[in-house]
Image (cartoon, rainbow, N blue to C red; front, side, top):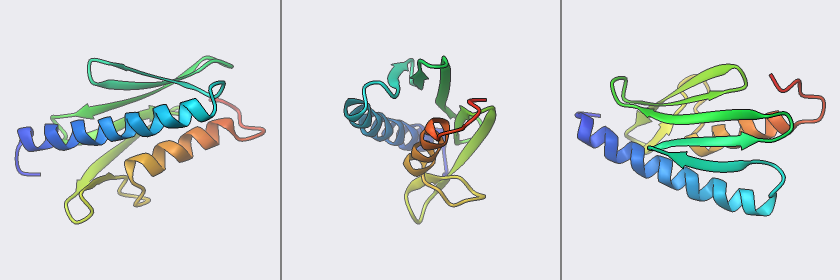
Length: 112
């Protein structure tokens, strides 16, 4: 990604797309989680127990960062796929977030 403005546009588009996806998923399972956006930061809130996943654009690093399940995930822009990707797994932003939500809801999960 060549400049900060280009990054910001790509990140805003990616986060907006993720927000729409999560809001649709929230409607399917209203007891599962709630999505809130504040100042460009997406929060996925769980009630029982109270847990928050935080998804934000990290402009200085030109990454999208996710804090979830006691771990930080940093996704880089992939110009061929035109998506933010987690380098070590190749997961896209939406795929990774869906996996993290599923892991949180998995039977027997420890809810770190």
